[in-house]
Length: 180
Image (cartoon, rainbow, N blue to C red):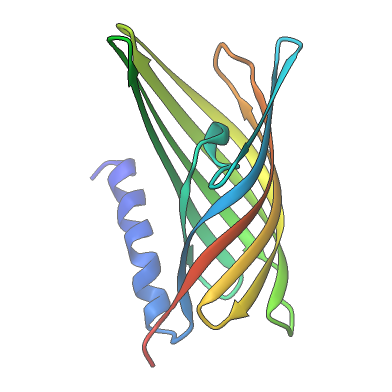
């Protein structure tokens, strides 16, 4: 079994272990907000609803709580643009590993490290680029099944673009609880 398959199997166990503990096991949602991209002396600012995702794309996230304070969060984004006889496809994926600081209330600060991947193809060419970064935020559980997040993040794209990405956003997610 390859290292990739072992890591995938370990990630698949996260929701199973959490289910056995009778607490929130996942949160599924999206973000809205501002993304500021800076490269080669120029800046592009984008606002989106949903937005503030991977390179400002609308993004869906799924947070899996591996314990009371640790979470794993994959983000996915897909975009297809077609016109004038050409088609451009972008696919973005990111993975966050985070820590939710313990509190006695329904709100808590968190930090997360992330890696990302963006693939763009169209017009007979394709380009794939990886990134690393981090996030800080504050998560409020508004109702038992609804969470609101305020967060800021930074991501450095490592390929030829040398792009710096800053996001400021609000996340809204549905919280899924284990059956008791």
